[in-house]
Length: 263
Ligand SMILES: Cc1ncc(C[n+]2csc(CCOP(=O)(O)OP(=O)(O)O)c2C)c(N)n1
Image 1 (cartoon, rainbow, N blue to C red):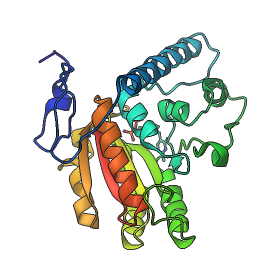
Image 2: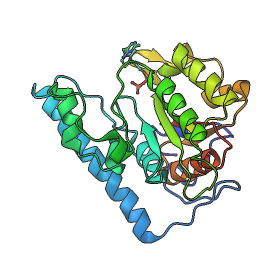
Image 3: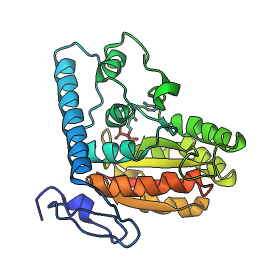
Image 4: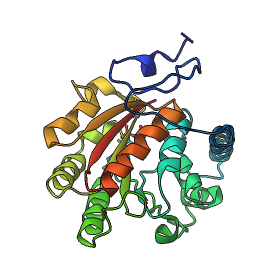
């Protein structure tokens, strides 16, 4: 095993379609048919968002941006999730989903504007299917749940191809906040078509995961009455396959779903 990749190869429930060394493996529940051109496209996305991220970090160090929330190490989780979305789906990000923004056609310079303090998000949330960033952790779980309840009430779910779903992004630390609990309860009891996508990067600033939970985060879903899946967030193929499945579940009325993407 390559040193430094231990965290994402742990746990028997972890869904992987690539080993940490990059070998293609199969999974009984989550298979993925993918062409060489699609593989190249996913790789291109990951390289480009990492490049933009590095530029933004340098700009922050030069004083051009007031702050920057890096996505380094979360490229595969974000590109896998972002590319799993259908055009009609809606994403509710936190402040770190620059890779998902890229997949929704948001120009990186529009993200830089927020962190430079010159605007509060200049893209069209409806046109892109990508809502504005939420800095207050994790208010977007409530926004996403309410939006998904609306999708259900408006009759937008049913057909796996054309129906709509919502996906909500948050971190491992966010799971200790009440908004996640409230979002999970409401989404569960109203069968809201929302995928809760937790990027578990093991840290909330200086607080490590063992200060957030005594059980793996994906297992919490069971207590609310919906499925929880743990995926290797460093594996773009597994993340794509699992998120596609989860969004399809939501579109066909079987939401919500929790995904824990370990990075
Ligand atoms: C309500 C609220 N409390 C505190 C903060 C300050 N804060 C910013 S990032 C962060 C850690 C979040 O960790 P996690 O949810 O794991 O997401 P990550 O930043 O690792 O992606 C905190 C506490 C905030 N933005 N909002």
